[in-house]
Amino acid sequence: VIQGCLPEAERLLDQALAANACFRTAKEGSTNWRRLQINRLFVLIERGRFAEADALLDQIVEKSRRRTIQVGAENALVAPLLASYRGLIAHLHGRLDDAEA
Image (cartoon, rainbow, N blue to C red):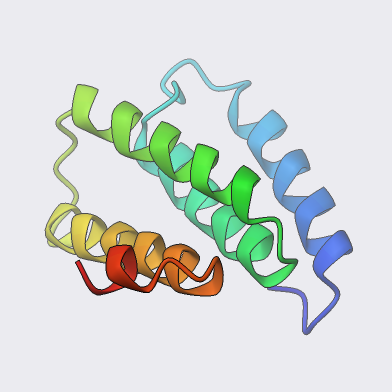
């Protein structure tokens, strides 16, 4: 992420998603889409936009379930990474019981 300039990072990630959408193989849930969205998720969390981050997290999880993309060990890492982001959002929202689950 652009060394602390979160609004710029968000804008550049949106541009990257738009550029990525130009490719025929770049459907929602594809590997590049998922990578960009996970970075966007991180920016939303850092900016304190937890409701948007929660909604994006749900979207990433749903789209990733629909596609069975095999990219080395990446798929094995995505579920725990997303679960940790879900716990972080819950913790920052003050939902400590949800964060520990």
